Length: 331
Image (cartoon, rainbow, N blue to C red; front, top):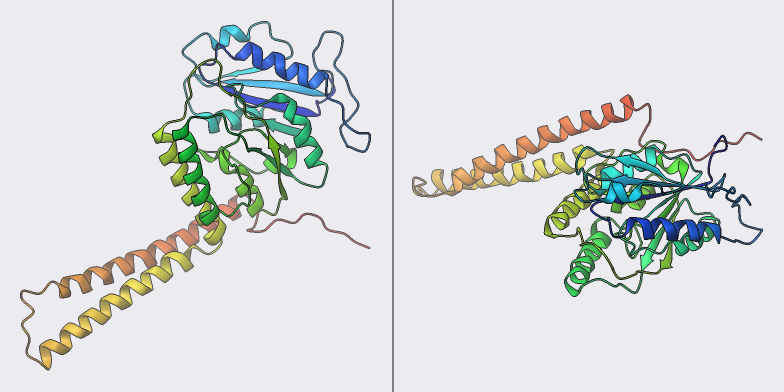
């Protein structure tokens, strides 16, 4: 196709042989039935006679090192761009590869387990047209197990405290983005669920839409306690970037000064009781505590200086600063 698609629909797959054909069928059906009001910015482009999507959409599946027949089940699916990983690199890496190999003006991400409803893409696009840059799906009626719901509630509570992205369900993969959101973004770790938070830090407008959540009918869930730990560490990384990405010395240096002052205060106290009260310090642990706190404080302060240098080099090497400009007008 010479014409670039308007929508890029991206779904990672990992051992989803029982879902991939049905998922593709549902996406194609949702796109062929997609009708929006004339006021919306969606081009009125339709699929060609071969069902290849025309200029309206493209479907990108990323096989994340599946060990079953997922890739084989993708054979003959039209339209489809299939990206195959050499091994299992994780969902975030799959989303990153899909996004970088897409060409749509609007990027739709979703899970490959058929628990996201492709018909909800219409809702996301309608919210985008209200002026948002990102619209995140909110699975307000979850179809998961009780244990997964408990973990999710705990993660959402921590996210509200640390990340403060003002959305209800960061774990929902069904999201819509404008292409400019990813012009300067690389995804690592388990960061895909925090993309709206990262974009919000850069000044993009983030919205939310209630979407369906369907029960899994084939395959097994990939969610486990390891992913919870990885997600928590990534959440701490987002917290750091939200508060101290341009001033790491304030965090590490400030902590270092507090520890050092506490250590100095303890040593002064020990010196006073030794000199003026003749107390024996040979069996007391406090002198060691004082020295330890001073060393920790110095180490934190030096780490803050190094982090400050690294952050400045990060922005300099990427030819950007710690702020983004939406537009410049001359009148």
